[in-house]
Length: 154
Image 1: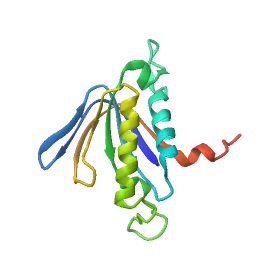
Image 2 (image 1 turned 90 degrees about the vertical axis):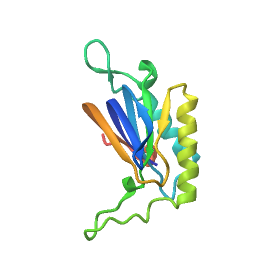
Image 3 (image 1 turned 120 degrees about the vertical axis):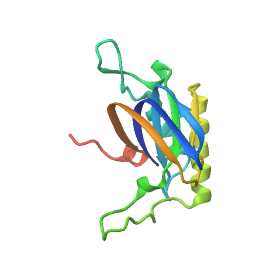
Image 4 (image 1 turned 60 degrees about the vertical axis):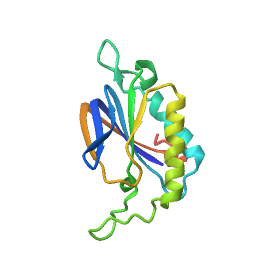
């Protein structure tokens, strides 16, 4: 499971001209599910996201997490984060989960985000969405649940 996380001043998502989600200061989480992912990947990704210290404290350093600051979240499904671009000019999406599996794990992740007590808005799964993001910083970080089993370089 991959998430591209952006710290935002505000963000919104629309489908067919209707706003379906809006957030103030917090995070936009663009979320992708792969064929190998399971619920443990969702738990890892949610825990990592809400505890990642990417919000400033008084000295403008990355000292606070979404939980520390009461950040709002806008969670949007984005299967294209699993695109393989190593060959040719057209992205290959064969590593992305099938729609039913992806929906189940996306909804699990959204539930886990909500269980943290943070305010969570979402886009609409498998819909064409227009996302308006005012990136704060800018701060953009990729989290991949597969990284939890990879050794750190030393």
